[in-house]
Image 1 (cartoon, rainbow, N blue to C red):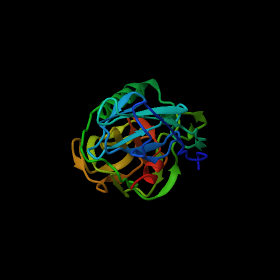
Image 2: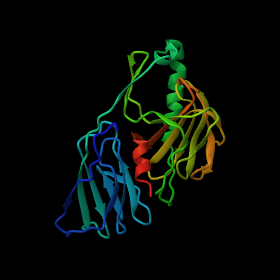
Image 3: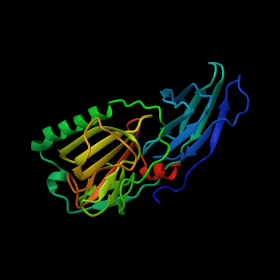
Image 4: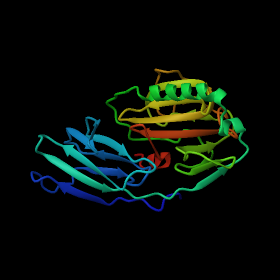
Amino acid sequence: MFYKKFIFFVIILFSASTTFSNETIFNGKFVQGGIVIGQNKLAKKVFFNKKIIQISKDGYFMFGFGRDYKSSSTLKIIKDSKDDILKYNFNIEKSIYKIEKISGLPNKMVTPGPEFYKKINEDRTLIKNSMNEKYVVDKFPLTFIKPTEGRISGIYGSQRILNGVKKNPHGGLDIAAPEGTPIKTMSDGKVLLAAKGLYYTGNIVIIDHGYDLQSMYIHMKDINIKKGDLVKQGQIIGTVGSTGRSTGPHLHWNVYWNKVRVNPEILLAISK
């Protein structure tokens, strides 16, 4: 595996007005690229590193850590009154990432010329604006499925060297499968973007699952849904393709929490 181990060690710090409590449950991986689901049935507000995050009626919430996340983070839960507070400090384990070398890409896809800059910038703006849309839902996403079956051909966090040129680290999970293989949504959600012909990503779908959790499906062949659709977990949203910057048919699957890429394999591992 690309990381040494998962850390579940949590240091619990309480304000003077609270006593020891086991009311908060955490399910997740306290590691770079990790994601955690928490629950406290009495929670009224939850702050992660001073950012207020959405909680469900049952007290569920989630938070995550990017590829190069700092070593520690804090969580504050306010219960029935402003003086009834739980404070947590988490130590985040560093990850060790692989180096992946990929050859055979067209040179224009590795180092595009200035004639492609306008298209690339337009695509980035389209993706950014789509992800800025907010989908608020009461139902908390507790279960997740892999969007397609196939060979894992690229993993989260690895350093990519394309045609000998060092590029940005890989942000998701690559699943190689025959062209036309069905792609399913990992959980219920709302389609924020369903677009074809983007320079790098090719045909792409972005789905918001609420609670700052979003998923992205890249290099697709067919797209079966449209922007604004509400989709159910397991619904077929399109098929595997090789559009955009791709050397062969595969799905590139990204998962974001608060617009930060997290490891899709960890999300699957904590699914209930």
